[in-house]
Length: 629
Image (cartoon, rainbow, N blue to C red):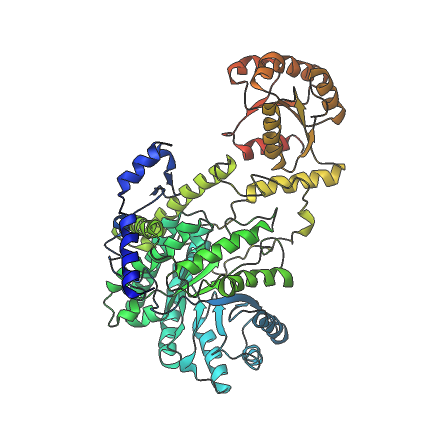
């Protein structure tokens, strides 16, 4: 095809597809469905439309023609790539055990390690590790609760002894005393001492290993306590700003503080919102860091490590955690993280084994080598939905950040309880939504595997760590816990009951007919009570009042669920309830779905509870289980 023919084809192509306004698209949609019904809201109340246009994606932060690597870095801090480090956490114990675990991770595909000390860190352990590991090829990080300066000195001196140029080292010390303060209510004196240590470590590394991060700000304290995305983002940025203020008071300039800071974000499974969160985070931090007047624009770049969240992970149906972490890993990478840790699917109830660690690594290896997510700079760029969501999250987070600043800054808001109260309100809402199944945790509050038993696989809970300092806490602590724990407690108690008595508490589904509506309500009820670990006995083979009641009584259940159509309820529900009460007075009787117009009559006949899609599942399961103990 000649050049003229190609140009002619392009002209025809664009003539055939004229620009269409958003209003035109909306009118077309309105012919089939209400456009308002297509709009949904994030957990922060951000309105999300089904589609956006280029004009709507423009924003004062993003800029119309912003490119990757350009301020304020919404599209990433690199102009050429979207690479990230596959990071695995290793327990630092004895030299032999630490070396074996580290080599297994590297051989399995990890190119970065985070060492978590379980014993006092010693030079011999690090030197043994460095015999087989080149820290210039495999990043070495440390997750610490104390002494960052000591850890940095031990590590860099061990590297120097081996002949490694420490000026080329790249890694991080994940040390966040503000997060520890919020999680444990540590005394103020301890916070001041730890910030002093950060300042000393920055001074040491500025000459020895300028590319090594000395301290971190982690968002998991908020995320794993139930905070929304904008809360997580605003509080994390506010904490980082607080560090810069405290370090400036100790003589550390903005460039040094920013260069040695790493942000550790906790990524959830709200896929598009999590992608937008990281893009918004870079934008916000660039603008906040700029206010501290650094000499170099490079200092306003956010260095990001992501870790899959613990908040949505479950003990029951644990392999579902693999699917959750896969989505979270993809969101982290598309959002532009610099490094990523995928937590093994079983980490919340036992010590991860070789298989679960391998699966966690392979999630990232698939993203890199088979999905090629690192091959495109800013893979989320150009998606008007993501761009608009980035804008909305940026704006809402900025507003909350500014409110924190008006209240005196991050530390003052911790002392007043402002931040804790904000997170508490969000947590209560999300737990209520999970309890009422407005928000789904697959395998926990919806679609349970009723045959699954997990009590025997759960490790013993380690005793809580106590603060060694006897001073009064400076702030009210913010406890981290998983969203599924209330449902899991119910199921574990049901397992204990079964172990003690020989069978799980039973719920019998009594079918008044074989109508489709009856079947639908029996499936709903099976799902409802299955979430509590109750044994479900389906009475579909014995429909009707006489056979159904007889079959139910033979099972001696804790509860009988009368399932039928609306017409069945009108004709037979009252009589069924009376017969059940007459012959089994201790049996609880439940009616799902219909029967609302006859509630008083049915309650008088003996019906104890009515359940539907708006019922508080957790509350009812707890009440019924209390009858067993």
